[in-house]
Image (tube, rainbow, N blue to C red; front, side):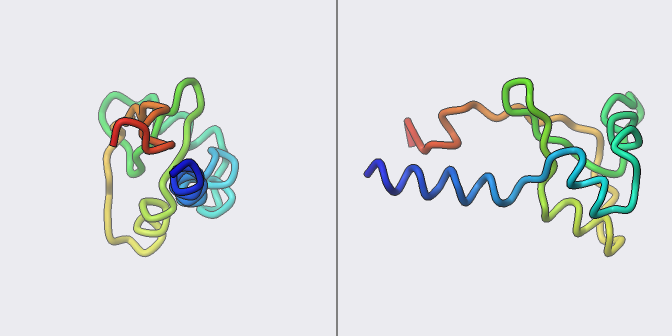
Length: 88
């Protein structure tokens, strides 16, 4: 069972980008993503917060690139246990 939890956590991590990685993929400055995240009126990309770390979903970044989605500035906290599958 532990191996399955580790696989799920690793798979989840591959679906997330750091601020720098997301900015590079979008051709923007990391400061632009930080400003969007702090904008109270909404931004075109949602962030995921895991503890103190901020991450962006690959799917959300790709949607923004394609112009499919204008997202929102919602920061979604993710409990550490959901990464490992504990309690699931």
